Length: 120
Image (tube, rainbow, N blue to C red):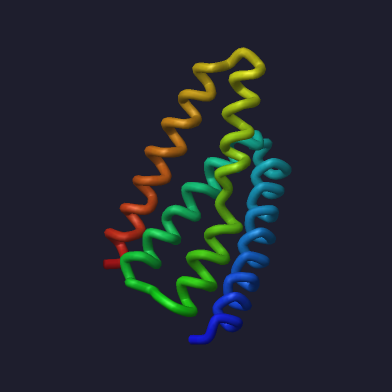
């Protein structure tokens, strides 16, 4: 597969992932009153699960460019997690930041492993 086509697949997947992240974030906040921190946790865990499934299927080339790098890369967000952690610490809630960090790591790794396990 050629370079320009891979770039296009990553861009297409990224556009879909960003839109999906916004939709999930909006739905969680408006329908269930979730916080920004909770919606970030949800998208990161779901994205980890999807990426785990892709890795277990040994996806390469176009599928990994579209779904793994593009979609999951835009759907999940480390920068928002970092901002959530910083905000919690800045607001005097270091314990909340620590719990969020541990939950994000543990649930993200667990979701990736579960995706791999269910797919392989």
